[in-house]
Image 1 (cartoon, one colour):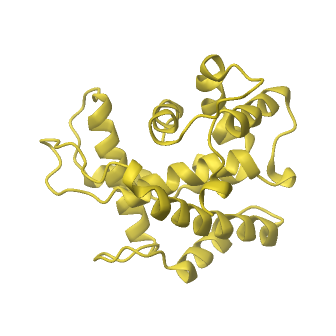
Image 2: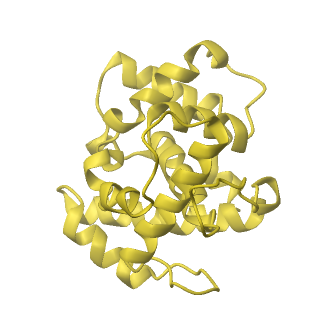
Length: 200
């Protein structure tokens, strides 16, 4: 998922904190574009299967409108989650934490125990966050003529939630110690609703 898409979806799907010493509007684009590089656990190289799932959609070679891209991303994430056994092919779409743990143990950087523990917790918290706030999320994807079957939005919203939570709570071991990443973390902690609190 591109930084532009994380920007749009953070804005659309998560509430914005009222009080902040950060200029939320001015820093939104830069902060969200840094998410993949500041927290090592969120790097795109760890998102296995994106290219393969995208290829199954047989997309036309052109730029896509905002809502078309939303539907495409939902279908890619659904495909990734199903291919990796994170959710079943048929409803109810509950997370298979055993398969998720196995996948994380094969991909997470060292110290792996800390990384896997954090990510498993993130999956659990974001599943609870989604369940609690799902009425705020669109359950009906806009129709796109080149995608034949409707896709499940749960995996996409879980991925967004985990990226936001990762930027808010990424362990120091895996977080880049730079002024830019410090700014990005301030944006995600002060301008975006706290995932952990929202999952309670």
